[in-house]
Length: 266
Length: 291
Image 1: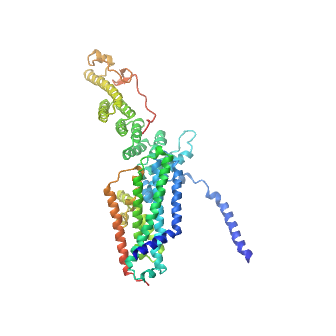
Image 2: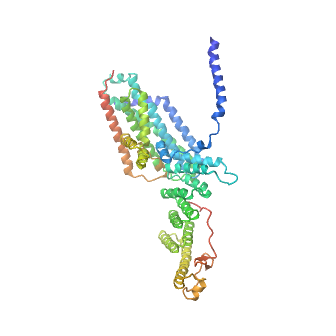
Image 3: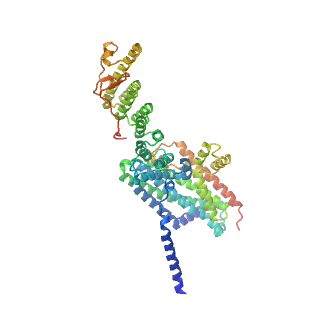
């Protein structure tokens, strides 16, 4: 039954018009990258990699926010959740099925975006071969995998938020804020730690440090720089990032299951 | 009633367009310079950009590039205004703060700021940091080394970065020559000799036989200069003044013979006893081929 829920969620996502719009947007951004590269003096390959990977990240984020977030929240708002639960499906199976379907949808979209990114980079290399630099295609693939990992983590968080929040809009806000905070906490922590007491109040320092440890550190999944310059990445860093993402997702989902089991459905 | 159904929306559309056209001049008015030349501090930009910091760096660089392409210098001075230089500097500084590996901002600041003598120490400090970050690149250490010597009169730092450029380029003879000449001009002959000996050793280890001959020739030149310098030092100790000429040193048997200048000139002494050559190198102004 869990597989069936996952598959239905995946198909629902594929039928969602927002997915087509988002994919088209990413495609246009990548086409724009080829035009933009004509303005760059030397590091053309680096700029192309930045833009393709950023487009992929942005598109995947929009899929989470506009498709993933509404999935469970809408079921609860429209009471369609009862239909699934009335067929003697344990709550945790329903939740994991939904999550697996959304993760599968993300994987399919990231695969599509990876194809578009590689196509763009090959085109840029053909056009500006001598200025392409040392872009690593292997690391570009790995960077897409890490984009998928962070989006799966964000989806897990959105599942948790949809059980805490009263509406899909609040879930959307909480998920967006989590991503924004999680992407900046490392830089923000560095900034406040380097600042003097006159520049930053101790309360602000404490707040930033609390956010740093509470929210997921999404910058760990950002491999753009390494891919753009072909920098060596230690297996330890990659392994740690992978475990961190999996660990945080499992924790968020487990908490969501606990909340869902206790939730009174009226 | 049916007429009102299309009349009212049409009327409101016309009013809207009229209002839009009326306010257009305000909307497209050129913003005052203090608004145009605004940049966020780099630390703040890094926090705000989050995972899109690389794209933010690209955009900062493109901002500076297009600004420089679209604005002319002051007709009287052939320079930009100080606040305009400051904006270009801040924008490029932001670009490299967000992505320290990004070559283009360094390239642009080297071309647009250093040669206009805008804060050469600060700009070259950024270029040197870039050279430290881009460990595979030989062009940035060359820029840093050249600027340290040419604009900042810091021969030690210059030689240090030119050596680094030579190492990274696999022994590009241009960098070697420049480093050796700067070391010589900064009265650091021994440093130059040590550097060339190291380069010859490395070339022999790597089997780069073609680069051995020019390196040995430059080493012989510096060794000849060093021999004269030692004799001058001995003369100065004895007579408490510098010798008038190299011939005087030979006459007093403090020097066996006039060393051969491998660069094709003849050595002579200036009033203070510094060794110079009639084939004096001119300051370089061109970049080397390749990277």
